[in-house]
Length: 603
Ligand code: ADP
Ligand code: ADP
Ligand code: SF4
Image (cartoon, rainbow, N blue to C red; front, side, top):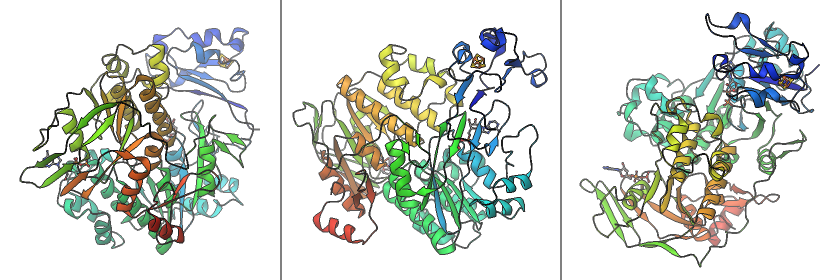
């Protein structure tokens, strides 16, 4: 029978040498002589005090939760599983460890998407599908083996696939989530890396479509994040395997590059009949990319559930509504809602700064930027959009005074707090020490509610900056930027490596911060949903990447979106049920009509 509650002990956090086994001393069943919380005897390293284990049979469940409160290191979670979760898990890593319920079902000729937070078991699922991890159906003490697993999945969409995995007949190509780590693993240039993976004879085509040509002879070490991302996508798609798994394709890519990557993945499914599985947190791109969608929910780090497949439209709609219909499961208290029409601009707001036309070029004019003069308003969130390599960071550096303009007086005398696109904080320093050195508000109830909670910092406060994952580092960097006292806050690609739920939370935190602190915030980002939910007005960059850029004056959301999307020739329609923007098929009736009318977004 399925258990109705689980106990998860994070063994990286359980430090019995620094506590007094408070959990055990206060556990009510233990106090009446039962063996609910016991010691892991045989597992302890020599000379080390023993870590704990919790009996899920005896534990009273979430309503007790005394040990969770008593543990000084947040090592314990006691969770009542939703009643709907009757089945055994697909896999459990061990006693009081993470369990995964459900598996995605890759299908030939189909792009299957997974939508959900980090830490919910997506990689675990893929390792199972790749045949690297033998699922134990929750029976970690006596793992059952592939034949029993196959029996458990008989009659499901996964039956044939699992039979192939058992027989060692599935080959897999995989793109990792954090491309920034590739240079640590590969010494050589782009060409050498790509030639190793050229199994389908498609390299030339991929290099051209993804505009990798200019960096073919460059050392992998010297590539920017956006270049690494495109090289990693090309390297994965160049392989000749049955099953392709791509963990996030969008970080550091601009919208044009995102759409191209999505189309290449679709082509491999449609033209070559391959099975594609994609995790993606940019919802507009996921919508364009996938045929079917599994939503993943649960409690990150404790348990995850991967739903049976939904249509992409329903999956994203249900996810945004915060309620999964088939599963009868609420995954978020509040829905995320889009406004059908451009938000009204606050026209009365005072001007924070007015700047003149500015120009700036590098070296012998290899790249030149023309900025049209404009006003940034007090207390607004100004979105900045445009392709990569068009001068957005250059503009930022002109504002901060890090760069001198060739003409135009850009000496704005503003204090600017800046979060760069590539977050480089990785000193050997604890998160709490780092953040408290930035603001004396650190730890106040205001700071905790407005910054620490929405950015989910509590659980990582005691970790070292150098040990953080990409998403954790991003959240700390956003917190650090907003916590500084400044006239203007400038965030470059805050969405990178945040999962979809963290994007929603970060969006809310940035908006509330602007409203409550009378702060002015500039946000450069390529996630169109995030920009839509965040910005009051838009500044659009266009031109020819790496050659010349032009920055328009800040304008209304409607005008800005129209100008920006017209450059890209992409239109959005509205989902009938939720008003969520969805990318139109090129040359569809709506696409042509909206282009004629010049309404690319708020149609
Ligand atoms: P995602 O890909 O959704 O971010 P993962 O599948 O990587 O999630 O991890 C889900 C959970 O499983 C995490 O809490 C992770 O700590 C835990 N986990 C991963 N590998 C192991 C392992 N070998 N032993 C115990 N726990 C693990
Ligand atoms: P974006 O932020 O829009 O991606 P950037 O402002 O970073 O664009 O860069 C615009 C162009 O200027 C790119 O082609 C980049 O290679 C070039 N560039 C940026 N910094 C320098 C520099 N210090 N010297 C020479 N070229 C530079
Ligand atoms: Fe004991 Fe369970 Fe209560 Fe924790 S939640 S104190 S393990 S009964």
